[in-house]
Image (cartoon, rainbow, N blue to C red):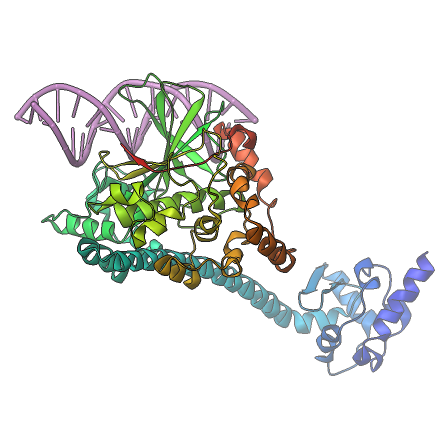
Length: 487
DNA sequence: CGCATTTGACCTGCGC
DNA sequence: GCGCAGGTCAAATGCG
């Protein structure tokens, strides 16, 4: 074995052309060569590395010097591009090490710098992506407002679009002295929330600078004020929505013996999303989860569906909640162009409850009833499916025209990399299955997307999170349908 | 020891 | 202005 190893070692050195020019006897490259080197083809990088030497060396002499100086610095060089690695020990050309140490250090620093830069760029990309999604949501709302031709929305929502700012900027712009109490780690969303404890301020005029800032801030966050409640049957304390939550409070709500728990999203520092979880007083097996706000960070695959649904519902709510004919719109889905917007929602017509009387505009998606076997809404899936949260141009067009029923345009959204959690899949499965066109398009799309999905990537972590926070198993949710009514 | 949860106090908006 | 209710904070506590 040792002989073979030594042979390979020699071969490795022989591959270094520069090394051949030197006086290098085999005995000078002995024992402590790394096995790593034996298993990799010598790379050009190695040759170049040694090429920096201009003179032949008496390696034995060098080693003597190094040994007496106590220097034994084992250095691992990793060539990330070529996938080669090499361990240089004091059995290598130590003199060359001495001479090249600055270069090695430089390379290492450069590598670290590039690594860091890569990390920053990745972070930046996430932020930009998030901003892009947010902006598109606003465009969606503005477009919807234009289609509806509602003057009030022409005043409010397009302005919100124009005043769009990046979420991170929005989070950081409120002066720190606007609050009396704050914890250092969640300054951002505290400010956001403090400005809107009970009532939406989209139509309020305040006089102070802080309040004006917050007011305009609120206008830039249309989703922030909308709430989406999801009613589902669950024995656990919370439903598994794929996100990571931290409980920050619990209150006894009036009229309900069950306490209401308050959770904050902890997947990203400063994420403004919160949820309230409360059991139904009439039926304690029903858990009502109320979401508020938009995530300012990428979501794990298993969280995308819920976020998409709630965001789409919030968008719907906000696009119609300021109108006087909302009730009519929801009640008669085919009456107006905007009605097609609602009509496309998957859980059409009887279970989604819109609360106009609540302090916040709130839409409730009732997942506690079995799905009705009628009127599947495949177009909803295209528009408000798992990633409807991130509408694309086609979606926006389809919303305004209400005629776009081309599944090929819409499938990429449905089958975006983040697949929905199982319970959500169950919730919409019936609607999907009943549309043959959709199924065919689905099959076609799968062939394109297969391999890109990462459905299970976060399942474990999410399960862990949910187990900590009392999340339910996916099976707790019932199949569902949702319809609109008004309180 | 660090992190999450609990829980009473506090803040804010609204209605009277 | 006061009380109420919803919502949040943060110290205390529990847990792994």
